[in-house]
Amino acid sequence: MARARIVVYPPTAGGGRRVRANGEILGRARSLDELLEFLRRAGLDPDEVDLRDPELLEWRGGGPEVWV
Image (cartoon, rainbow, N blue to C red; front, side, top):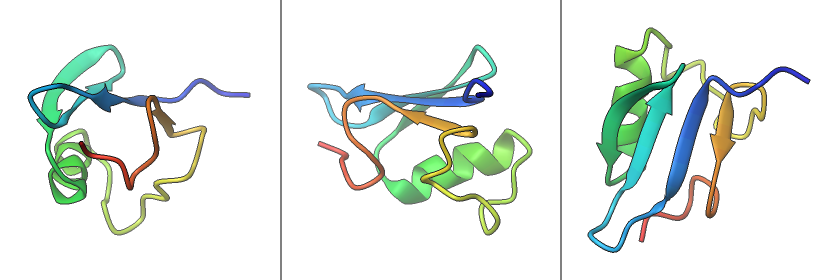
């Protein structure tokens, strides 16, 4: 199984989730829209991304529905 390129970390006490792509921290997303923007900046087409694809995204501390 291929390792996920994008890691979305658990929600922080201050809100949002840290996002890392290929070892580089992209920032803290506070919503799904912000995550999709980070993915766009990382060279992915947000319209083509399957947020449940474990080969692309590794969700830690809950899936795409968890932001707080």
